[in-house]
Image 1 (spheres, one colour):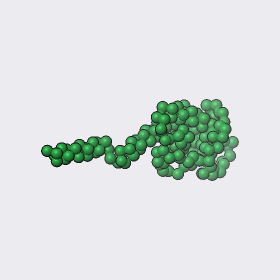
Image 2 (tube, rainbow, N blue to C red; image 1 turned 135 degrees about the horizontal axis):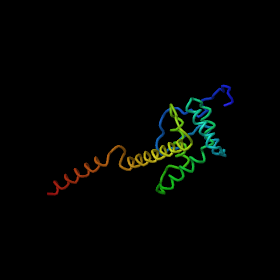
Image 3 (cartoon, rainbow, N blue to C red; image 1 turned 120 degrees about the vertical axis):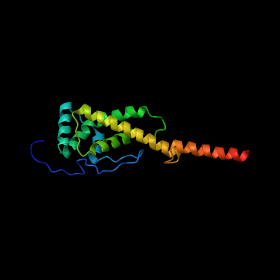
Image 4 (cartoon, rainbow, N blue to C red; image 1 turned 90 degrees about the horizontal axis):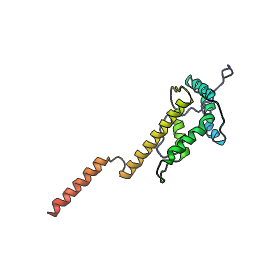
Length: 167
C-alpha cells in the first residue's frame, strides 16, 4: 500500500482453488491463515476496512494482511456457535473457522462495507456450514440419500405386507 505494485504469490496471498469440502472434514486454510493462529495482530476498524476495500478491488495481498487481523474474532464467533452444538458434534471450532474462511476467500468479487459486515457474512457462512453438517449427519443416519418420507413409506409398505400375510 506504499503505492508500488507488489508481486503477489497466489498461494501465499490466500487464493483458494474452487471446490467444496465435505462437511465434518477439516478444511485446509492457506499458509497465511495458519500463521495467524500463532499470534493475531491488533488493528483498528479503519485498517481492516481499508484492507477489505483493497481486497474487493483485486489486491490479493490485502487478504493475506487481513487474515491475522480478524482470526481471533472469527475463532470467538465459531466457538460461540460450537457451544450450542450437541456434545457429540464431530465438527471442531478450528475446522469451522477454516471452512468459513475458505468460503469467504473463494469469492470471485468480495465486497464488504466494513469489519462488521465482514464478520456478519462470516457468521452467516458458519451457520450455513453447521446446517450443512447437520443435514449430512442426518442423511448418513438414514442411509444416505433416502428421505424421511421414503423411509416411512417403505416401512408402511412392509408393515402392510406383513399384516396381509398374517390374515
